[in-house]
Length: 256
Length: 297
Ligand code: SF4
Ligand code: SF4
Image (cartoon, rainbow over all chains, first blue to last red; front, side, top):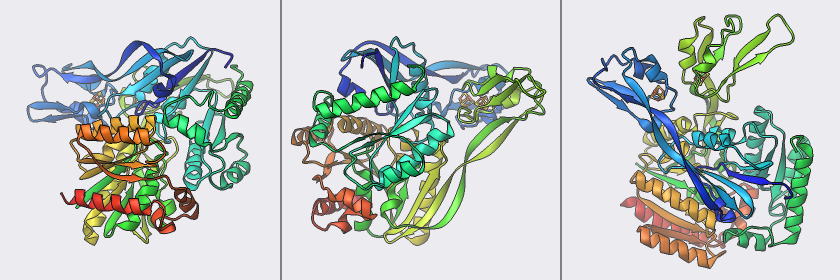
């Protein structure tokens, strides 16, 4: 869009941006979290580690110590408290990051391994990587809890995409509560703006929320989406509309 | 007692509307909305809240300013970068340490290291959960506070409450509307469940989500079936899903055509099967009868 842009897929539980940007991946980086490993020769089975662990991830049962790796948050509390210095931390891979270029866009994707519960470390690792582009667009996961917070934290502007339906409005209200809670500037895009009622508009007006764009339903766009194609080039109206949206947001952010 | 969990990976596949219809078609069950970040199911079930309870999900650390001597030790111990430092220009103090509550993971490590005992560690209220009556049976649902963690714990609590309720009322089915993704709240929703229904639609992204979900339910060895929603919007992809399901030996339990009355019903706050007895209703009924078969096994 005139400037160098990076696309960061931070929906690490279900990353889908790859389907559309079809990037060529040039680099893969493992994401690891530290988990405890107990040296049973040193361990005196006093259980201080399990008493200290807030996540019930380590348990001392008689003369055995069990680590539940998928519950571990990697806080280091157990190794820190162990009076025998019997706990060492070893890295455990929970996902990976792919890097490359797709359609002229710098592409980064986080992907949580299936079966892993805790996704924020993958997003955190992805956002720590140096990006060469001027602008980073982050594709965030759904919801209002830790995975989303990790994705939108420290950004300059948040776009909330919704639909004018009761579900859409309810989810929007929750998302607005979330971005207000962490004090980030934001605006709303109403997608498929003609399928429902005008309660979303009324809500935004009442709450003095900027409606940045309304995008009406289009069968052609829906079909292109279903095939995993970019919407660009499908519909010139849509393209123009997105360009305006981009300029509008770029104009507000002093980071340019 | 059987627990049926309906998941879809991401929004937009019409999962919650479908759960609403299944609620209307089935009898003698407890309904649970485990999408605790963005609970929508109650919006189409005409619910009346009977009981509201607080949810305390975990602890958080707080620096007690009067006791803090600004020694600067604690940030070194926090692996979550939650302890912030700032220079002050007004007031008697020159600087201040404070804990960002959204970043604090509640591990308690800093608390043990503070030489002044200036860090308090307290349970925090991170949401509410509700017991509602609906014309379709009792509904257990919740609302996680804005920007809160611990959605997995809240999900486990809801399922536990639903089982208690089912026991008490002699109901032998629990229908769970699952959260998006494959992470912590999803794992909390499906572990130990009897059957998983994955709702997908013929689009490349929904199929990708479905594949990851299926890997997850296989990982936990839970019997799984697939429902293709809006099956007529892209016949080519629909047959690809069917092919995929065949290879994976997963049964397709329903194919539901696109039906504009899904949105119309939602606008009325009603379930699809009741709002429009024609339309997609027939295929939803077929899905339900296939599901009932599967649940018997
Ligand atoms: S590192 Fe932290 S979360 Fe992991 S087992 Fe040790 S105390 Fe528990
Ligand atoms: S409790 Fe743990 S996460 Fe929270 S501030 Fe202290 S060290 Fe950091």
